[in-house]
Length: 401
Ligand SMILES: Cc1cc2nc3c(=O)[nH]c(=O)nc-3n(C[C@H](O)[C@H](O)[C@H](O)COP(=O)(O)OP(=O)(O)OC[C@H]3O[C@@H](n4cnc5c(N)ncnc54)[C@H](O)[C@@H]3O)c2cc1C
Image (cartoon, rainbow, N blue to C red; front, side):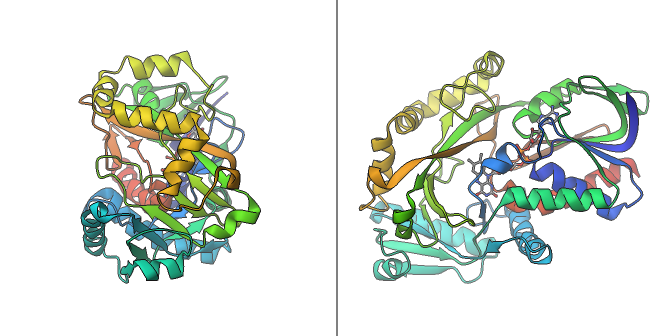
């Protein structure tokens, strides 16, 4: 089979679907096809995340993360209202447990203000207790813009609108190769070849491979980090009222293990961050020799490991030992017990790492020929997705006009 389109999008996570929606909304006549390798959309990062609508507190002012998170967050709230998607703007607290964390909390507050967050509020220990009675901390920062939503539902809604405007989605269609053919791209799936004038790669955990298969030489690799969650037993879920976060380690791109009341009412604790032996390895025993070889033969991985081996060992310890995991939660909530929690799900983050072993902090979107490759879209890309989609739409329109 061989069909043609103006634009092909690879990846049916939230970034691919938001991009498809943004482009078809600007250009109703354009023939756009989206390919997703799984039977369902949002099967990977988008369907395994914390469900938090991030305010944009942490990100370097002026970065793509900071700007798209701010505009994407408000666009997402509007989108949820418009399409009747359950969500809550419930706010969150970042908790300083002792004095050593106060300077970092000050810095977060300053960053938040610089990122345009109004209404940030410093909480004393007793104000903190009023809001989250089971948390122990000496100070808190209340961030009112933070919320919760089900990102699978958001993605499905985006995809539904895209299809209603003439877009086409092929599920269960893994793209194996992209090649240039005079003025178009040949996109190969298992039993079929598609032709498109332009291409957007939103393949998440496989974005680097798709880019390489398309002839690009990205200076990075995706390293998969699994995040594991515990779920509160229903009778203990009242320990958490809203969202509770620690002060993050500024050296790490992850936000630290937090407590999240999900939109379905369940409460989760997590995620940690352990190296996954498989890009879609949701269980500790999941191994892919190909994925492992890709990680271990990448020089950047060894440089990263040389710097973070101690943190890595601690994270692995927490992965294997529930009591270590619970111990780290008890820093924020001393009364929590192992018995209050059952093992929950997990997600795998696609974190791009460069050859020098640096985790790429900002979103990374590169253009080559008439292709746009989304090579790093970790958290808060779900929050920012509608804005990332608009950003990519602008680039694509400049390429194909
Ligand atoms: C544990 C965890 C917690 C997180 N928490 C939050 C949060 O609370 N808030 C927030 O904003 N962000 C959060 N994030 C980040 C957020 O989930 C991701 O940034 C976002 O989902 C990325 O979307 P994506 O579309 O780029 O990737 P994905 O959702 O991974 O989608 C990529 C898609 O591409 C498909 N694909 C890959 N290769 C091919 C191929 N060759 N052919 C066809 N299809 C292909 C995959 O099957 C997949 O469906 C979290 C992430 C994780 C892992």
